[in-house]
Image: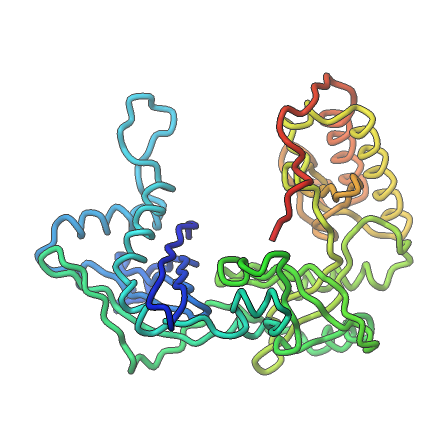
Length: 402
């Protein structure tokens, strides 16, 4: 569980800016799987800090201990909060996380200034803007690591560096892949080492504060690089069933599906550390800025009727193309439709035997019949007819994303 607070400050002129951001909170890594032990992972200036916290490290500090135990209850998801109670005075869980992370970053700032005082060249904003450096995915996946522990005595917080800590925590998840599946995939897509994948940001200043989602890759050996969508796994086991996911995309690659069908294709597999999979590369969809490209029902009021009809027709057309190629969409519902900046509708999340309650019946999961049921609801409930009002806000498409 993580939240987005970040703290930036200026250290001495010869060391540059310090930018820290919480990536994750993990429980139960202490001795005897102490449920109140937390390992908080923080990124700072291209390095990764693993911060150990526990009530055992807090002495004669009831204020800090109370704050920490409240934070832990939120991370454990047993914090009692009634969002519907108008008399409720307890703090919202997201605010508790945000405030605690901001406080923790402030407490750790002396260590950040000592151990991560400068910005490594791959993340240097000026050099990125000038084209002097090109950060690689390996710079993000496997940064330098520092281990520390937060001790508190008499309400005085003391960050302790643990330079002799031997355990190599791996926030970046990598997964094995079945050898036969890998061999078959290599006939259709390129396998690349993370050290050869160049990551890209529209704005250089996002190189430190954001996670890479765009990659420039030479997919065919021509020297010409293609902009792809990059999907890494983080630390939460995003693809516990990686083989199943890759097999679904392999079926698409082997099928006679038309090349102009608006579904993302797997373009490449990123490997690291003994050939384990560290990320996947897909067709890049430049999402419509409004609503992040999603079909949110409360915003469709502001979408012209002819545009809604366009999307309905495109969704139906693409599903027909899938079925004609012997494929299924697999989890047909509104959140799996993406609208790009050309106002074209793309189908996401292909190939699974999953279903979303309220859109597809359980017994129709992963079938063409289930696809048609989900499409009928998307078209009938969201895109057919209804009132229209001009959108009252500025043009979302004028903004650039990261």
